[in-house]
Image (cartoon, rainbow, N blue to C red; front, side, top):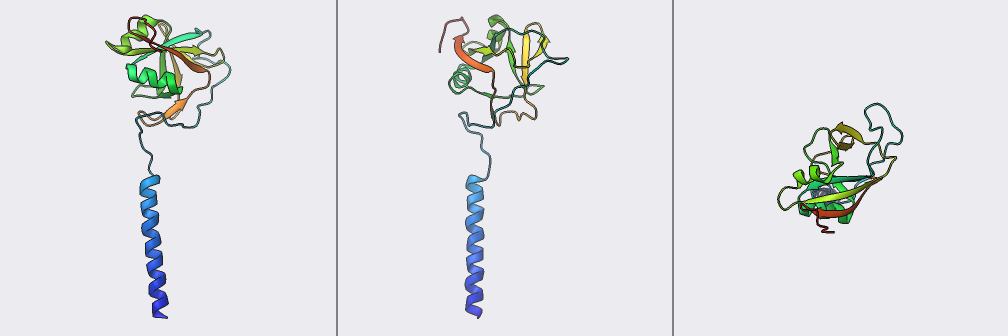
Length: 158
């Protein structure tokens, strides 16, 4: 009887060790260096106060060249330390180029007319991501389609 108890206790302890190791390996969210799919952020349809009554169909997003190419190739966006947590875009290339800095890139974005963007004035638009986590998750936003990448001089990179 005691032998059965010891074997059972050993099996339970071994099972917990295996479970703990599996949780350690697979249970923690990680911050990969490449876009990982997360649930799509659904677009808001319609227009209420605070949202742009009219918006350009082409917008620009300045960032590092590597990030610009990742956005273009994957279609996923990452939220940074901005407030509000959002994808920030400019109506003109010159403004976005300022955020790309020296060797950065500017993503050309085709914005669907039904995507609700907030107009912060001076040609700045945002797509807010409720409960967005800075530098943690990548988001696919329906209606914001990266269609190209330019260098800071306006030359097409991708």
